[in-house]
Amino acid sequence: MKNFITAIILIVLFTKCEYLIPDKWYDLIYLSNESDIPISYFVADSFVGNGSIYPDTILPEELPYLTYPLVKSNEKQVIVNQDHKIENYFKFPADTLSVFIFHTDTLNKYSWEEVRDGYMILKRYDLSLDDLEVNNYTIIYP
Image 1 (cartoon, rainbow, N blue to C red):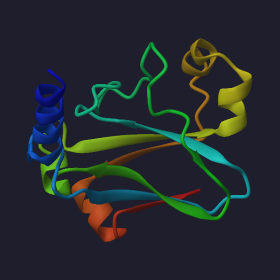
Image 2: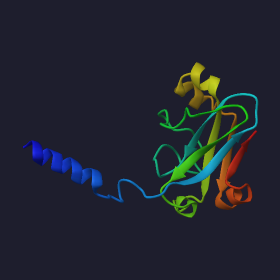
Image 3: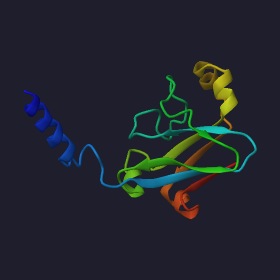
């Protein structure tokens, strides 16, 4: 029995499963925080299924999974990476991607319901693929 379990583990470890583990990840979109405050972001997209898709730009009712990533002052960070190229990322019902920017302190101080109902965002970017290309796939805040 021990040899059987060991064999199964080895097969799983050495078998390539291209559907579970992509061969390559693409850094698609960057966020550069050129302000003097820490910010957090939320990317509304259909791949993760974590919110409304443009033109519906209201914040989702439940706290999105990827709301709290922190981008420190004067820091640049990858905010979207996928196992496919960016052109495929824009092949969903809308050709516009919404990115919401929050003051990190706001997210720490208020409940998601208060943030959502008060639309307590610093800025919202509605970006097409062309917008991203022009800006070298980088969103610059502010």
